[in-house]
Amino acid sequence: MTTPFWFLDERAHAGPEHLDPGYVRDYDRKAATDPEDDLAALRDLGLNETQTLVDLGAGTGTFALAAAPLCQRVVAVDVSPAMLAHLREKAAQRGIENIACVRSGLLSYEHQGAPADFIYSRHVLHHLPDFWKAIALVRMAAMLKTGGALYLRDLIFSFEPDEADQIIKQWLANAPEHTERGWTRVELETHLREEYSTFSWLLEPMIERAGFTIQRVSHGASRVHSAYTCIKE
Image 1 (tube, rainbow, N blue to C red):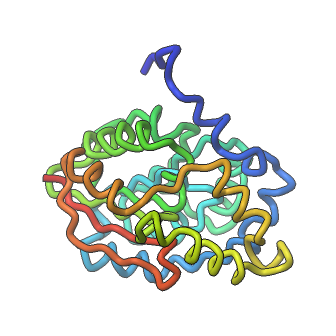
Image 2 (image 1 turned 135 degrees about the horizontal axis):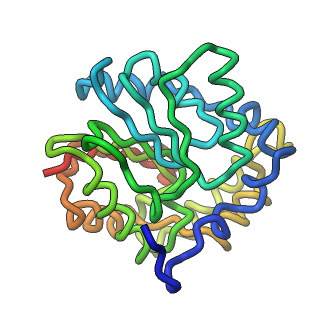
């Protein structure tokens, strides 16, 4: 794909910390992500060893590595060379050979071969403004087979604008004080100022217009995190 000059630079929007090898080395401990619930959701949708899963925004590969034994092929896509290097190192240590690492982003990844059966994307879409979210969702639909599934998790606001002050205050108040325990209040405030989480009622029409049917939605108790199961029409 030849990228038009006017396209958003995804690497510039990735957050400088995600490009820093020092930060990436400690990322897994800080994120403390457990992939089991998401794997269970994909198994319920029929994920099996004959299929291809594309992990868009794979990061250090927590989900890709967990899913690899259940798939024929996993394509781990990320804009960060440091993240992908860490993923490759972990895959080699575990003897996992069916993960293909691709340095690319939601707007630039070009899927090769037969259409994918599944797309998984966790906490990545919020790096794009809404215009580019819509473009990214159309691109996701194009790389999936008919009936294929997109499982999307992100920081998505399931509240009305007039509730923002109260809900965001509570979210920030519950943030840990120390970075080793997760994302601190300062980091969450940076997310709100500089990144692009959107409202669920804005995102859902984008998903549907891109060619998906929303099969299931789960909003977190904080009303700041959501998960969507979407089927390509």
